[in-house]
Length: 75
Image 1 (tube, rainbow, N blue to C red):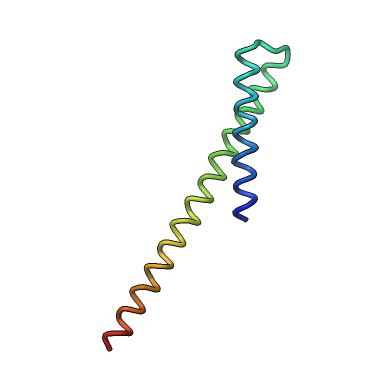
Image 2 (cartoon, rainbow, N blue to C red; image 1 turned 30 degrees about the vertical axis):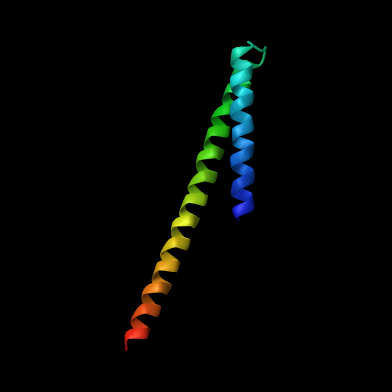
């Protein structure tokens, strides 16, 4: 799932850059690429949100394990 999130974020960044280039260079289908850029922003946000939540989950898991180990040691 992490690989999918990374691919989505990278593809979204590519689409956003492509939309910016279309807007800057006044391509014929600029409105189409503008829509693709919006979709790209959604991909980037979704991919980074998943990776952020995964990282927070890992931190909480490690902390839960550390607390459990600490209290088990005291008894």
